[in-house]
Image (cartoon, rainbow, N blue to C red; front, side, top):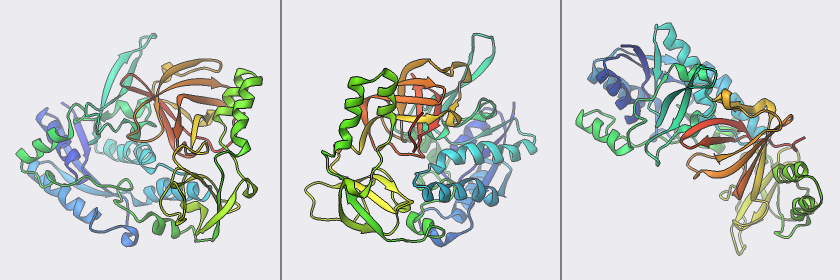
Length: 403
């Protein structure tokens, strides 16, 4: 049997993961990661790290496994928090949970585990790991969706590598959330009835505006409403009628850009960097027949562009672009080469139902063209693509024009 270090978060999922590994005969060690010191921006009664660490210790004692707390706050600040600030300041919307898994749980934390002579690290993610042999006879690790369709967390692990997967175990991937809670209840674990934490990975629920205002200061700017019949929305259609397939694909994947002259000022905001594409709340603009949604942000000019209604063409696009340097394949053996394409299923956010899409690889990057228009395609977020239950790869959605 193997020595396995479990990331005990103080939640029910990692608690049951540790128990299942123990039942399988592994030598299990529990580690709690402290990644945050600043309680001023957290909602303390939602997910305080101190309470979580106590719960993790209680579970370890109940199971009779060694336990320790490690402080990764310095690495977390550099790799996750500073990254978030940079992305928001540039007008992009980061996904810290995806980066936290790639940079912290399966990098820094994995290194700590290996120092303890661990064979594997394990987490309470609702995902599964598989193995296949490729055409060259090499073993390839698969990242598979969790059996619980309501809790599948494969999207959050979309940036993992073969090396990271080779050292990873996901004990609860074959279970549903109710089954996990039932096991914890039967064991009388302190985490059995604990609700799932929300918010930033390992920080808890955060007042995001307060969090951002620590470095990104408020700055009053204009809210510009772009009408649904703006001339620019005809451009991709016209381009598609007259130009090459490559030009049509580029047109579909190119984000719209706006100028204040494209619409009418309908209000003011406190900083474009606080808003994200698709956002509805916080605009404080009334008197409209339908809700307003953010369709673009210009952090340089400090302007927010909005459109009225969920069907606004600025909110819905059929394509996106991922520059070559941001394309990541978990299954490197299946990676597309320039000039190749494949039709798969993809999603642009966690919990979004999978959407049919065609992936087209070109020298400059990857084009993802959806069968149906997608709402709120957001620069800085991740698009992940799947073949059946397997997540094959992912990429960072670009804010710039392809080519």
